[in-house]
Image 1: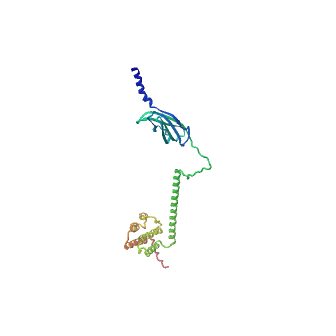
Image 2: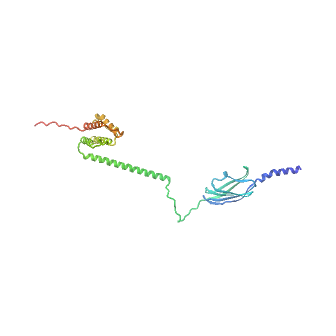
Length: 303
């Protein structure tokens, strides 16, 4: 009895282990495929009934991408896997896949497979009937440089136009000034009188009135001392004339005149008529005391 009991127990123990099988019956795969051209792969397995066959995602080759998959259970012991695969590596490549036999979340068996596939370059068409329909493209690097060059040319053009206009304006002012042959102080004093009679003050155009008054001073400085102060601020103008002997005694009057004008032109102050009269007197004083004085010739002696 004992002699037959041991073999019986051994068979009982080994039977479950032998029953857990997973075998690849058939595989269909191409040997050559064009680059980035989808192809079909098919696996047929036989396995122990009551178990499930699953694909191990981590075992897949990185040179391929699975675009589609399907699983068919043909019978309790056979299953078919269909894959649509996309190759992304030229030359000889290996598509690897591992299938796992599982039950209740536990692995009972594995089947590993390697498929050797040669990936060739994609075919190109040399047909005169084909034409390019995509719009022309400029590489990003060249486009950046092109835009930078166009922007630089545009900026240079603007600067040149501004320079020419400034030169033309300065030349026109100088030509206009050169046409008047009267003494510089006579011209400036006559322009002050014309400004007072222009009606700007009565129409309350105070800012324009003081801009014109300031321009009379700057034009006088150009005529009398060849000082181009047309673009100077008040502070720059004071620094320019402070070392001039003719202007040194009048710096306080000049500073007062310029400050009063800046309040109207930039701070939108509304001056009173007394302030206007004071500023006009200051400008007249600057002009009269810096203009050349006539020298009287001594009387001739009788012969």
